[in-house]
Length: 336
Ligand code: NAD
Image 1: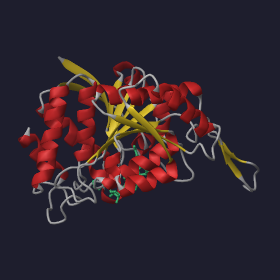
Image 2: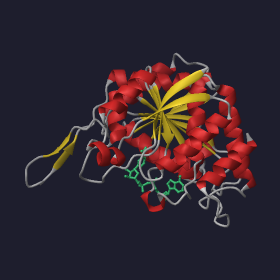
Image 3: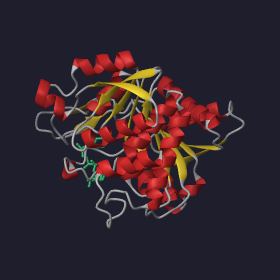
C-alpha cells in the first residue's frame, strides 16, 4: 500500500531536515508519494503568497501532512502560516511529547510527559488591533469557548486512556482570568468525572512552570489553553535537552499536520548541520497516527539508538562531532 502525503519542506533548515525524514520513512518500508507544496517565505518568493491555494487543496485531499518549519516575521509582515493552517483545518489539538533521550545532555532523566495544547482559540484567535492611529494602546482579545474547551480536554483524557497514561493535569489561571480560564477549568473538572481510571488534578500556570522545573517527573499528560501551552511545551523541550529532539503534531477531526517544535533556524540554514531528529520523530508520530505503529516504533528506537551512541549526531547534541544532517540521517537508516 502506498500513501499520498502532503510535504511542505518549509523555510530555513526545513528542506534539509524534511529530506532526511522522507529517506528514513522510505527506509522503514512505508511507501509514500509525497505531494510537495511550498508555503511561507519560499512561497512568497515564488507565488507572492505565503499560503498558496495549492497547499490548502493538497492537505484537504490528503488529510495528512509533514511540514518543515515556516518563518514568521516578528511584529509586522504577513501573519503566521502555521496559525492559518491550524485554523483552516481546525487542528484544535497540539500534541507535544517531551521525552528524555539517553545521550542528550539535560537537567533531568526519565522525563516522559505529553503536553496537549489547545491550538485555535484564546489569544491566537487573531482578534487584535491598536485602539487608535497613534498606537496609544493595543488590544488582543482571547476567546475561550465551551465547545473548544470540551473537545481539547476530551482529546487529552482519551489520549491518556489510549496510551496507558495515568494522570492528567489541567493548567489554568482561573484565579485571575476568572472567565476564560475559569470556564476551561470548570469543564475539565466536570469531564474528569467520566474518566475515573485517571488521576486528574489542576495547577495554576505560574506554579506549574515552577513545578515543572523542580520536578518534571510528577507530570504525565498536561492539558491547557493556547498561550500557556505554547510556553509550557518549549519549557518541556528544555527539560529534555532542547528543541533538537522535540516533535509535535497538530490534530483535528479528520486532518493532521506533523512537524518539529523548533523553527526554521535561519542562522544555520543551508549548512547541512541541522539536527534532523525532531522532524524524524514527528514523522514517527505521523506513522503511528496512520496506523503504521511498527514502523513508527522502529524509527523511534533507531533515533534513540543513534543519539545514545553519540558519535553520528549533529553538533548541537555533541559539539565534538562534526556530523552533517545527511550523515545523521544515514546513521538512523543504518540502525533501522
Ligand atoms: P528556532 O527554533 O528556529 O531556532 C532557535 C535556536 O535553535 C537557533 O539557534 C537554531 O539554530 C537552533 N535550532 C533550531 N532547530 C535546530 C535544529 N534542528 N538543529 C540544530 N539547531 C537548531 O527559533 P527562532 O530563531 O525563534 O525562529 C526562527 C523562525 O522560525 C521564526 O521566523 C519563527 O517564527 C519560526 N518558527 C516556526 C515554527 C514552525 O514552523 N512550527 C516554530 C517555531 C518558530
